Image (spheres, rainbow, N blue to C red):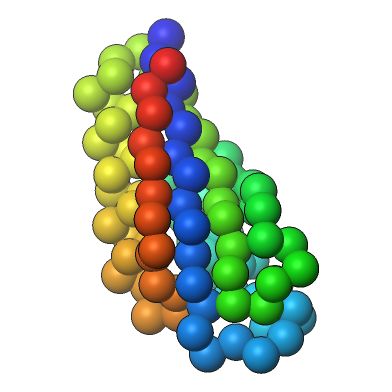
Length: 93
């Protein structure tokens, strides 16, 4: 069993309130969950309007599959016009 963890640091440039941040993050989390069947949670930067940190987790029998899913998720998030990816880390357990 292989577990993949990805932590993504995001910048939301056109946001000016916590309510706007929640809307953007909810949209991203819903689209990613529906498309890739992964689990997501906001990890940090709860009180900042334009910053966020997301944790993404997936599990599979093969590390190749886990790596592929997380890389596809990252490509999907990076293509989002709403946010900029500042940094991300992928770890396989």
